[in-house]
Length: 211
Image (cartoon, rainbow, N blue to C red):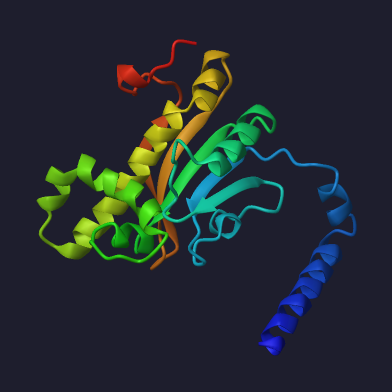
């Protein structure tokens, strides 16, 4: 364990040295502030690192991660990140990125009792309930699992659009695009789900706030 831990510290030193070799002022410039154009809401899965997937450098992506890339309306952690990204950093794009093989989504397909996380998984189960007819009609389990991952991303994009933070930004004319992606760990490619919100027109009327 100590060897592994010490290697992490050594890796940091090597990374710093490589960055300084490329640009002696790299960290000085980075320390002056951030103005990322993107907020990434992704899964906590260790195989899905936001910056690396899209080839972004530190300072280019503001990141929030949780189990199964969920946008839960009562999650103050997520809402605080979203508020800061939209109202302070003025990001222009919010990307919800799920991934095939997501353990959280897979758990939501079962009645397995895991522990505290059961309460979080319940939100994913709601997505299954919304799309039960489509999902139950898919006989192949892997295909149904993959489609569930995609539909979960779709619903999280909509849930972002329902927030007062996002709708207020749109109301004042702020440029803000919300996208849904699914990352395929087996080949490293992102699959654009072709669901993008730039205003609240695609939301059901009940979710459109009178601002």
